[in-house]
Length: 219
Image 1 (cartoon, rainbow, N blue to C red):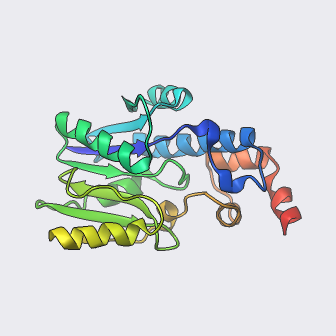
Image 2 (cartoon, rainbow, N blue to C red):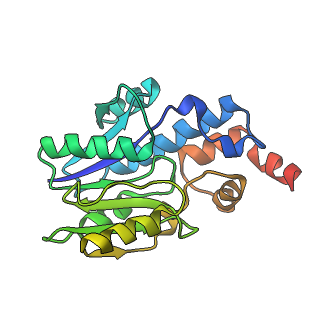
Image 3 (cartoon, rainbow, N blue to C red):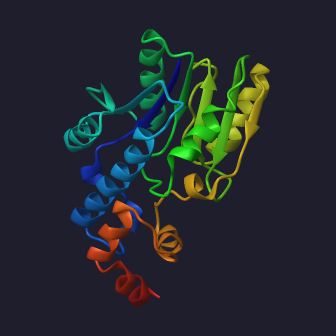
């Protein structure tokens, strides 16, 4: 069975690197809008057998349940890697043969993007990566089996994950995807996202927050 998991941290403290443009309350509102965009895309996936988030954030749980997305509840968070591996272990207990991890802050992702990855899953142990725009981060990560390698999210995770797959002799493929690759973490990401109109909750929220003028003022 193919599971898709979105890890969600405590969004009340989200997006520190946007603090030059937005106060915390607005960064949090943006984070929830982006999460809803991602979960709406996940909801429409045709190839995912089960669709989940892993989190302890109460509002994220509310959004997920409202969209029919299952919840793996955490009691504490020790970082994204720990959350993803915890959820992957639980997914295996639930019958998962593979787990695809996608980011909760890539609002341009579509259900077709998700299914593109899932339909390329191999019959043998293998991994599929979608790198971040900078080719350093790992923005989507399919593992078959779900514990094929440990998660190593953070700086240069893309290369760390590939190196670990090589060390263990697990074949992998990498595909670039500009929608998944654009996770919104810093002002440059925001500028890129706002360079074209999109039919997303995140775009609408940023218009409400008058982000275009804020970006222009910052130069």
